[in-house]
Image 1 (cartoon, rainbow, N blue to C red):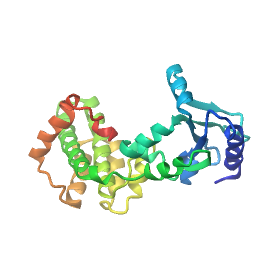
Image 2 (spheres, one colour; image 1 turned 180 degrees about the horizontal axis):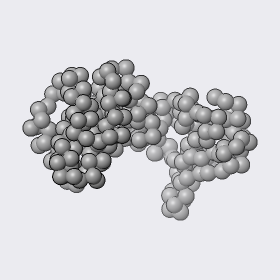
Image 3 (cartoon, helix red, strand yellow; image 1 turned 90 degrees about the vertical axis):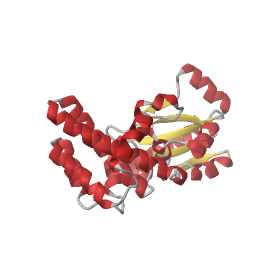
Image 4 (cartoon, rainbow, N blue to C red; image 1 turned 180 degrees about the vertical axis):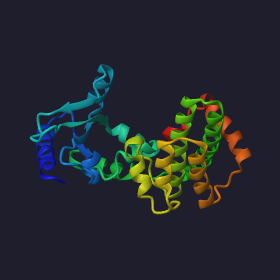
Length: 261
């Protein structure tokens, strides 16, 4: 952590430590993960009392932003206002992006003994969902590979670029799921994929080639690399059936969209 980030954390901690509305505060984001640049912001998560959280939810006031505590160019502190109940829910059934947001997060202060224990249970890969996710992601990969061929055949630029991005997303999520790595949402997706210990050789380069120049040829190289990496336990025919259930008919379940699992 760089000195300017440490100073900002100390100042915002001092500001909130004795505020009865916020009995705990967490530090997250790139600073907590050790990926911060000199000009990176400081991400915080303020844990509000139930009463304060309910009041802020009703007012639509659950985000925090200030430049007051930063003494470096473009620096600021921002974050989200949560409740202990939210943290408990995240530990029990949080999506991967939600869980990933808490990776390496740490307490700035806490007057709630339970927070440390709950925090430790959030950034954990949900192994009981791994098999279903691999099936769902492989299904999306198969269908988007097919879409690229169709888009090229019909000169459909929108479908071509959309399918290329989704092919990389779901092919990459297959690898993250295989390695039991939480999906951090789009900003840090390629970073996590590049650091997955078990992945096909040249996968990142193939993904970037596909994104720069979407075509059947670049899609084939990416797709075959993943198919040759391991048997994903699903035929292409079965994948299309699963796609109908997971995507076209997803409205029938309360489950969030597959991309947000």
